[in-house]
Length: 459
Image (cartoon, rainbow, N blue to C red; front, side, top):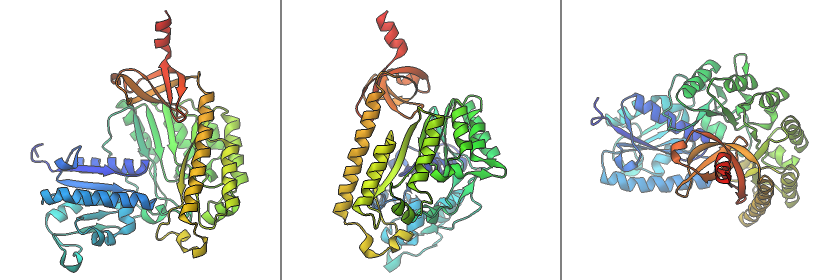
């Protein structure tokens, strides 16, 4: 098939790192079946919106975007418009009714059959009729969850650069009462350690020097006799891999064995994202997080004892149903006590089908109170982050140059401790490692100068 005759596909992704990885997976599947991947929906015959279902705001944003893309497809009648991912799985065929201009709804376990699904639509085979006479053509909903689908044997289409996401696990066996993930991605499914290591070696041979291992509760990974700490050590020892990160772990699976690997392997970054979610035992129990504040703090103490310089980040949810003001204050106390380097903060967002939505109506927090709590949490978190980063001004850190900076003549990179640094340099150097003095901070990011550049100026 010539490049001129190839069908063109565009994938637009919203949400977490796993969604980004899934977008690359869909692109790889389509490219492997003769599609040409393009950079804009205006140039595509197939437009797929890859979605997140974690929060209501994210879904509303996607619905608005899909309606916008429908304007484009009216100008191009042959264009196929699909919605994939977690939101597609959660809403299912109801999405076809709410947005009757959508041709394809596909959940995360359907990607292997994406080319066949598009072929069925091409053949004008009606699968799901549009309600109330709105049928414009065939529609297809692919929503089966498959406990055997872990995407082994499928190749992602990766963007160029020195870093790469490597999914090692799909789905989740935890049932946190606020979380939709187990219902849209199914139970935990782990990839073969052999295939993961082969993929990492291939990435290293292709010039990637930093990999991030991905999983919903990534450190619960086990495949045959290979535990997550064992896998992490093997990945860290692959020739050409200079940095290894992983996300997102569950506190219960932060074990002495895992901490030992992090401390002993130079390639494993000194950064741990540890989602606390709340700082009160009653709230954690209602969330079904399966740990207490005390046990969480014990894990943090264990990590810091082995790696005193480690940077910690976290996720926090405020206004979970039933949370009292005193319990919210406990979460603020946790933030002040632990002093996380960074925090991703959210208001509780009800997700249909999750156990938390069935809590007594009187437990749900007034939206204005929830917003006030979120703003207070953000202020506390940012103040702590600014204090920590201000104390680090003057440090010399190794930085991997990941991309161009916002201003011309600057580049942007990250330290092993996951701190973002901007400094003078050429974008032609993306992928290089260099020593940088942290000179200033805006609270969240740093401005710096290369050590060699400062030496050259002083001479």
